[in-house]
Structure formats: C-alpha cells, structure tokens
Image (cartoon, rainbow, N blue to C red; front, side, top):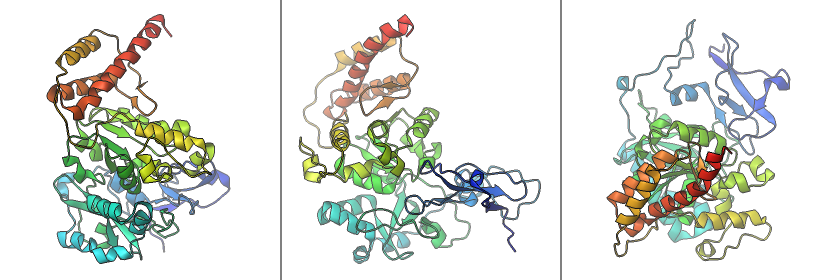
Length: 428
C-alpha cells in the first residue's frame, strides 16, 4: 500500500503534462506532483522531466520542502499546513574530515569520468590544478562518479553533490533513478542539519577578484580556466539562486551567467537580492544563441570548450569549422569583459580627482531607475547601488591597478547617462 502524501500526476491526456521549468523545452514532457488528498499541484518545478536524454530532472516534494525550509512528512494529517522550520532546532552539520580526505585519494581519479574529461580537454597539469582548486573528488556511489564538495569560507564541508559524467563528452549521465545524489544521504547520518553553500565558496577568501555565478559546478570549473579574472562559483541549478547562498557575497562585485532560457528568471532574482549586493546579469548567451542552442539549453561551458585554450588567450579565436560564427562572437566578447586582471599589481597611481568628479556628477544627475546595459555582456539592475559600491571600492583602493576596472565602469556609465538623459527628459 502506498502511504505517500504526494504522487506524480497520472497521465490523462496532454493536459496533464507540462513544460519543464528546468530545461524550458517547448514540448510538454514534464509530470508534476499532486497532493493525493486535495488533488492540487505543488510548485511548478516539482516533478519529473521525461526528456531523459537531455534533462531528466526529478525534483521531488521532499527536496522542494527541504530547499524552502518547509517541514515534510509523508503521513501528514489533515488539514495540512506547512510550517517554517527553525534553524535553531537543528544546528548546521558538517561532513567528517576523514570522509572528505578519503574522497581525494589520487589513485581514485583513474576512474573519475569528469577528471578524465578535464584531462582530455586541458591536459594533466591544468586538470590537476582544477582538482586542487575545487577539491574535485571521487565517489563509489556510481562507478566513475564525481563529488563536488560545498566548502564554506571557514573551510568546513557542508555536503557533497554526487554526479556521473560521460568521460568523452563531459555530459551528465541522466538515465539513472536519481541523477543527483548527496554525500550526507549516502552517509545516513541521523539528524543531519543541512545548510548548503555555494560550490567554490571557499575561494571567496580572495577579496581582490569579482565573482561570477553559474548554475552548474561543471561550468564553474571549466570557466575558471578560460576566464580567470573571476572567482567562479555555482549555485547548483536554475532555482537555487537564493538569499541564503548569496549572503556571503555582501559588498562583492558579482556577475550572473545564467544558462540559456534562464536569463529572465535570474534577472528577476537579481533585483530581489539587490539588498545583498549589486548583481550584474549577463544576457550575452541569450542574445546571441541560435534557436537550436536555446532548445538544447546551452550554458557558458558549452561555448568555451569549443576553443583551444592556447588560442583563446591570443587575439584570434578558432572554433571548430562546423560551428556558426556566433560562437566566435561570444568568445571575443567574453574576453573583453572589463574585470580586474588575475595577476600582481604594478605601481600605484592616484584617482582622487576622478573619484571626486564622478561622485559630484552622479550626485547631481538624474539616474535611470530601470536596468541599464553598460556593454554587450553586462547589465546593471540597480544603478544607485552600483554607483555607491563602486565609489566606495575606489575610495578604499585608490590607485591600485587591480581596481582600475571599477573606475572604467563608472566612466562608462557616465557616458551612457549623458546619452540617456536627453531622451528621459524628452519623455521617450
């Protein structure tokens, strides 16, 4: 007898199938969970996508309740009223150090499919650097599986996300009963107090670089090689960009790189999280991708890996001949993103006059209240906060070459406002 409170909606025609909120494919291949006592659906993201070859997401009610801090019991009595769970009742738990260290056994990497893919893509030396930087580990849960550890800025391991990849293509293997598994579940620790953090959060102890956020851990790892001017972190999925994970980013310069079809959701989320910091949302992929690429849900890594790494750092870019010219355009624009260089500083100068001039200009100017695009890659969602934080950063780091891009962005914004103001006053 099935005593579960929630079940996938039985098929009764196409009106019982929906568009998947995760992969955004136009076909209705998504089965949603219903409450068997009320017949009502849960959140539109809760369910299973039948596109097992390219999506295959299975987001269960229990996962949804855990992610949103709502208590869950499969034998809930009537009437059911979800109640918030107090974090004080269950302190944050951490993965034992011995488990973490055991997963980093170098001999295990001979079977790790994702590490094999990195070696084929970048060579042994760069792959080893990535393994060390992100503590990429190996799991026995599936043969060849990878563990992406979530390590906070205190060096404590919150949990580990276990996934299996194809060692040749680098694509996730999704035709599994549970395409994603968790170390804290595999350990079967009683009363484990899960509080996730960003993948790569431990790298945020470096305060000199801006931060870039992507959806998947794989994309963060790969992008860190091609675009080292950022600290690359991942939230894990389109729906996991939230205040709890982003609270560590307070006061940082952060650019969001959503997967294709994710721009609108993350652009809206950036405004919602504006109290934490100013999020710049890149619409580069969304504006340049083909319809086929949008259907396939390409992400930043899908474009980057089309380039030979050595050529990417030169002036020329050489995508494979069969790829459309849009790939080259994206690569050129990505390399042009105005961010601090990853290398050591040179001689110090003084920007006091420029800072005073910019501060006076913005103080006495009419500023846009809507998002404004400062270049082909970056959109400012909150102009006032963007200006305040950039000015504060410049005052604190006056003359340090690493922070010159902050000055350049404000000067660029000033030029755009000079163009925008006449139109605004004219009522356009």
